[in-house]
Image (cartoon, rainbow over all chains, first blue to last red; front, side):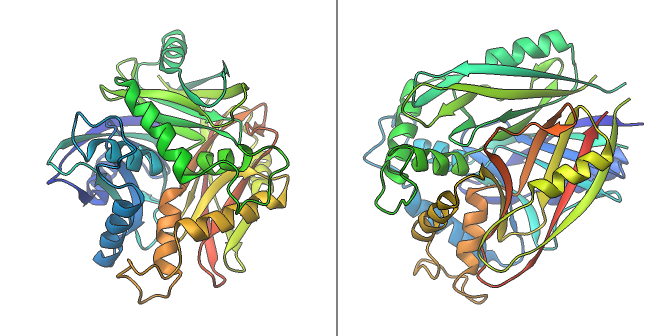
Length: 140
Length: 140
Length: 140
C-alpha cells in the first residue's frame, strides 16, 4: 500500500555556490524504506534554487557561476529593488531561471538519477545563509 | 490512507504581469482536508508560466518584468514565428525559462512555502487572457 | 485505492533538436489505466532537458533553437570546461535553464495538457544520443 514520509534538510551555505546534498536525500530514502515511488524536494527561499547537474568535474560548476554572473549581473542598473544589496535582485532572478522544486522517481530503493546527476542547492546570495529543503516521499 | 483530490483554478489576466493565487490554492487545500502530502499545479498554456517568488515588495516583480523584457525582447529580429504578434514568441520563450508545473509539499495542513514565497501566474502576453491551472492534491 | 506504476522511455536523438514524446506517455497511461492522478517524468541526463511547448507550428521550435544558440553560445570564451566539445558546457546550461523533471496531472484518463501543449525531449548535444526518461504514475 502506498505511504508517505516527510522530512526537512537544513543546509548551511558559505555564500554563493553549489552545495551537493544527493547523499542526504539518499540517506532519508534508505530510512523511509521506499522501493518504488517518488520524492519531491522544495526549497523554502526566493534567493536559492535547486539544480540537478553533473557532479563529476568542478569546472562545470565554475562555468555555471561565471555564465550566470554575466547573464544576471549583480547591481544591474535596471534594478529598482536594491535595498537588500546588489546581490539580492540578481539572486531572485537566478532562482526563477532554475527551480525551487524537483520531483525525482525512486526505482529499486534508489533515486532514479542518471550516472552523472547530482542534486545541488545553488546559493545565489554572497553571504552565508541557512537554507531549508522540505523532502516528501510517496511510494511503497 | 492516502487519497487525492483534483481541482481547476481559472485566472482572468489583464495582460502581462504577475497574478498571485496562493490564497486560492490554500482555500482548496483547506476544503480537501489534507494534513500531510503534496500539491501539483499545472498551467495548461504555452505563453503563461508559474513562478514561486517574493510576495513582499512590488519592486521585485517590476524588476522581473524589466529584466525579462531585455533578456527576451518582443519582436526580436531573430524570430520567424511572428504571425500571432510581437509578444507571442517572446511569451513562449519566457514560459520555457520559468515553469509550467510545480509540486509543493503540504505540512500540518498548510502549503510548505517559505515566509516570503508566493505562487504567481506570470502572464506573458500583452492582452488579457483566461488561464486554467489544474490543482492536484495527494496526501492524508 | 491509490496505486503507482513506473516505466522507462528511451529516445534515440539525431542530435540537437526537439523530439516530441507526448504519444508515448499517453500510450503508457492507457495501459496503466489511471483515471485521476499524476505522472512524473525525469530525464536521466545533464545535457538534454524536458520542455512542454506548442506542438502546432514548427517555426516555434526553430525560434527556440535560434534564441538559445544566441543566449548560451557553443564554445563561449567564458567556458573552462571544454574537454568534451564546444557544445557540452552550453548543453549543461541550456538544460539548467529549462527542466529535467515535470509533473503533469491526469484527468479522466488523459494527460491534463492544454490544447497546444506537447511534451518534448530537447537534445542539446550536436551528436546523436540515446536518452532515458523515467515515467512514474500515481493515481487510481
